[in-house]
Amino acid sequence: MATSTPHGERDYVLYLRRSKGRAGIARQRRDCTTHAARIGGRIVAEFVDADRTAFVKVGAGPARRDRFTAMLDELRSDRRAQPLGVLAWHADRLDRDIGSGEALLSVCAQGKHPVETARSGSYDLSTPTGRKRFRNDIVDAQYEVDHMIERIEAAKVESAQEGRWLGGRRPFGYEADGVTVRPAEAAEVVRASEALLSGASLHAIMRDLNARAIPTSTGGKWLAVSVAAMLRRPRNAGLMEHRGEIVGKAEWPAIVPEETWRGVVALLNDPERRTSPGPGRRWLGSGLYECGVCVDDGRDDAFMVCATAGMSMGGVRSTVPAYRCADGRKHVARYAVHLDKYVEAVAVEWLSQPGAVAAFEGRSDDGAARARVLEREALRVRDEEAAEMFAEGLMTKAQLIKANQKTAQRRAELDQADTAAARVTALGPFRQGESAQAVWDGLDLDRKRTVLREIMRVIVLPAGKGRPRGWTPEYGKEWGYFDPDAIRLEKKASAGEAPAL
Image 1: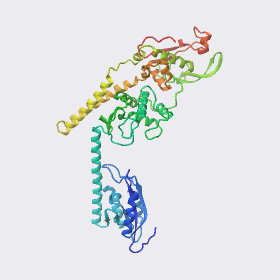
Image 2 (image 1 turned 180 degrees about the vertical axis):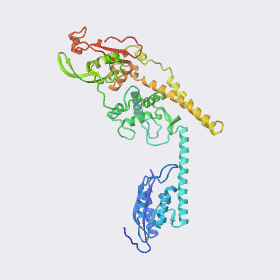
Image 3 (image 1 turned 120 degrees about the horizontal axis):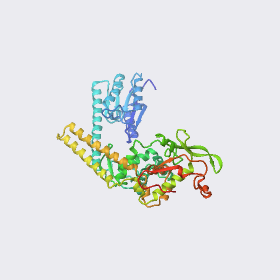
Image 4 (image 1 turned 135 degrees about the horizontal axis):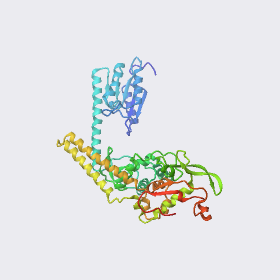
């Protein structure tokens, strides 16, 4: 930078700032350039903070403006005979917080840097009068923003209480107005909700959406986290949320029943739910089937995994996938293909029996889910009434806290009931009239495993060597030496004895 300036001229650093979501840099630059020419100034450096606010919320840390900080550093290092001036469009472009504004005031006062603005006049911060005017204008700017935020928040609360959409990015399943349902996307919300309740993982739903080229509302690909966020939305059930709380019914129609949405949220919030994708499952019974020897020994870690083992297959010794004890014990080993095939066949047979699904679920809702929805609404109204009574002096703070704790406890109990109900919906697809075999064939591995958890316990017993009892060459073509008598299948509901294969 030059160290001398012609008589009658002063060098200025120009500071421009655009608040988030607002245009105006070009206009600010144009007005400031015109103002500099009018006062005989010359702009020698420009500092621009785009999409940065100068407003600081009460109790929050300072706003981050990297170029503003760089400008202060430039002013501190200035050694000219005629100090640099500061040029901005308005005082509120320089700062809107009296605390951080003191930093600029201090630097300019010590270095005798004049401040010029195109819209709010000149400030000589080396004088008490100039500093007072600058502080007053910042306070006015801060008040204006505070008041604007207060109006916006009040409008949002009113809109939320009335169930009106507060605006923002188009929600998946709805049009840009946030109210009109987009049928194709709404169907995907229903499909994903039912899939999750039927045992599908978030990653499986994500893969399915991306494989069918169903984009997000912004046109991107789905991630597991975005699937979860979409399924958690209260708007799916036609509910209005404000600051993390349900405040009532919304103006837009529901895509799924509230009972279904509650079940989805309960399942996603369940601490026992496996959230890490981990390695992809390849075998039906890994972590599900149990070693009969370990079970009889009373071990808690009786589960088996699929590894490899040397077995005689049709008289030929070979290495094949086999289920074995998870910790390496060699109590039993069973050829995985035949065991999975047998378990699947029995599962389909059980589920094909009349009334089997209801028996396995072991429950009849009898409107309980709907009753929980209505009770939640009653609890919300009760909380509002308590808050109004406290505001009117009809209830002490201690009484308000006690009332809120009581409703919070009841909500937690309702959440637990939702979680318990969500756990037993894996059999839902088998209630839709299609044959059990067709439904089973349409399930992915995750959902088949979830169904097995609901209906049976698979215990693998030691098997004798050679051909099993009743073996025939015809049987051997399909099953080899597989012995069904060495598999104990226990039903998880009292629907009669396990049918023979």
